[in-house]
Length: 476
Image (cartoon, rainbow, N blue to C red; front, side, top):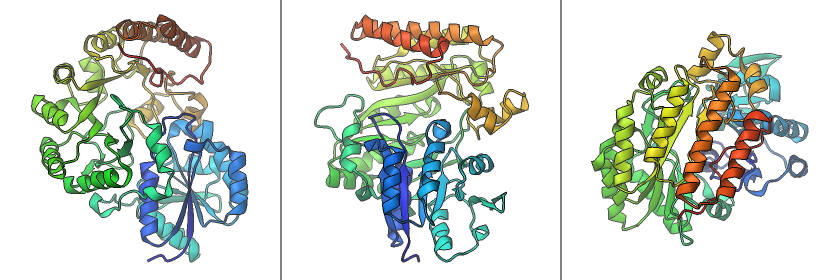
């Protein structure tokens, strides 16, 4: 067991105010604290600390490991500069990177960031061993699940099997974080001033692998329902949390677990609200009623397409009929409905875009503005390797050279010329925006402003715009 060592986790800035609690880092911090490690967190996300301010902090403090997790979308914009800052002021510490961003492309990320180590996949077992190695000047080659640079050559050790028993992992170490700031920053669907919102995970992974999706580990692993309820009780008792953002990729699975969740929650007497993600093929009226009775306010469905051919080509393993049935059931039960569609995948056409738009307009509950994004083949997903196979991408360097944000086309898998692609997408999103405002606030000036933002994004190269999801509107 480790009895010393000092680790810093840096949560990089997302340049927004609705910041979610960093669950991955919360779990890692809990594992290290349990092993008597001194752990600090530096929240650039909440406080918008600059790298200059981080430099001053690092000058005054010494660490053994400085850890940063990230997604690929933030690599060029944020992570490269952050790593430069850390490397300049880390002293004898190792800079450790992890998460979905670096795991599929460790060689490229090591070369670009000059990090000391990348943790591949989940880090609950690898990170404590890495710290022990650092303190005892051991050999990193003996640690499974990492990549590192050795005399200019990238070494990848054997991948570690993920933790099967998720109940064995302690709850996130909330006490290290500015918890009130995270609670106050979340305003979820049907939020009331007395609500206190927070995120949690009841599982890891998914039963499927769509071609645009990358995850670090295969399959799905579930916490026991009793363990989940214990965390809900603790968050409710300690911080007054009553509204939960279930961050699972797939919360509604299997069906029997949802009914067990209802039974165990009722035993506590706690009344909660929550938002969760579901697949249309494991959703029916009985499940919907159970979700509603347990406090579900909003369901996100990754429907992705209204075209069966496209769904099949993206390995979605669902049908258009299942999409429609799920939307109708959710609406009938008056559960908020997130209709998520992408366009530009293999097989997509102008007609499939129009059908996507029509389906959203027919079934939307107008809880949020729903717009359509082009699909992005992030490193690690099957679509990324398909793009390389087709000669549409050369590799990670080419990806990051082309990537600006997820509302822009990065690789064109369709037969539609790029200019026409954007014209069609602009018209579709304009239609959805106007439809939304006509049914809600009637603030057509706001609608025109948002439409203009999309126009400047698609046709004028103003890439800082990040889509419609954060626009605040007043529903009638």
